[in-house]
Image (cartoon, rainbow, N blue to C red; front, side, top):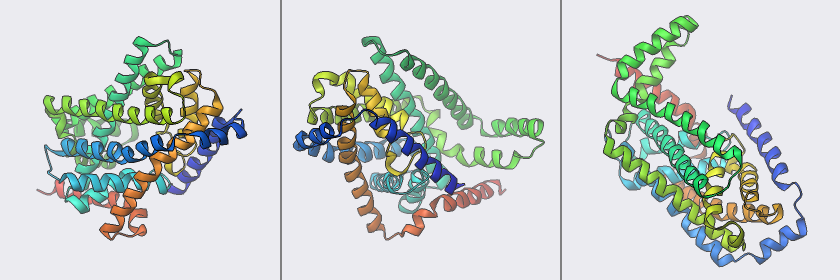
Length: 344
């Protein structure tokens, strides 16, 4: 399955990079890179680990606080190593690596760490929807933006309702799931469904605290606002602020965040460029200038986060084989934790 996911991701990246590069004037593209303000790109380079690792680590620690107390350093290290894994390894194993790394560095049960990541992604979704919704109130945006907001809001609301119910009534939800699987599939998927519900329940405990929910949502807004700031700095480096400005920075950051969730090659190569080019096109930025920004800014964001993750990975003394096996290791640990929870 992982091999198929890898090849699907590569195919998606090839199609996306072709789409992004359509109509690009290559001489002008090289000129845009040569004329870029590398001092400003250096600022974005330095901010990338702070925004993508530091704030995310603080959020993850808060999300886990009702059931676990990992150090902020452990959360930051696991986050950096996980983001690095997404940047260099196929099949988007970074989320497995984050849970795996925190279990070893911070002593957090794998299921709890994984549940916290599910909640984090849900708050990311709501934060992105909120930012895009505000933009639709102030800008004339294409109709597809409104459609995207509505679909995303419904999807993440469904996730929220499911997670709240699982946090509040895990036994009742597991019993309901058993009845459904028996009726629809003759009980064939009863055990894996129950295993998933029972093992991830601890990671959703934050949702029982309205205060922590509000704090987590607010931190999600802060996270994506900070990322939008780095986009604005990148736009300034390529001389595109006059066309796109702050609205373009926020819009591009949000749309690209949704876009790179599509399976692709390591580091979101192709999908990042395609969604950046299409987003900036809404603000009248021509494809060559947008593609130059997408390539330069992507490099300025990719390199420091990957380098930090590699440095922390080397400090831990783990091997590449450990990372490559992290998905299977996490699945095995989840099964063990499920069996332990069934013990009287």
